[in-house]
Amino acid sequence: MVGEGVDIIIGGHPHVVEPYEIKCHPVTGNPVPVVYSLGNFISNMKTRDTRGGALAVVKLQRDSLGRAYAGDVRYELVFTVPPADAKSNFMVYPIDSVPAQWRAAAGAFRNALNLKP
Image (cartoon, rainbow, N blue to C red; front, side, top):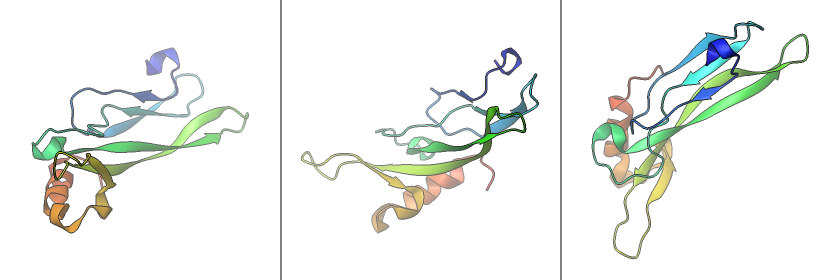
């Protein structure tokens, strides 16, 4: 897809967050983020690496010719907390803001991911 001139690629399905790569646009030479999987945003899966997901934060910029491209890229991790009872809902928290009783599980989720710091 990069060879065809696509500017941003976001894939999915394996239920785990995977590292992203930065490729080079074949015509402009600008960076092309390739995000392989953002994991699960809301999930009732229970293995360490499927308890959450990521948001891809992409800063759009312009090159010297005024063409837009995807510049800086980073992940913001989220963690899913299951309902406490039948009247509650799943809750999604930024990874650093999970309730105290879920911090160990959130830490295990983060540690299970093969991501750059």
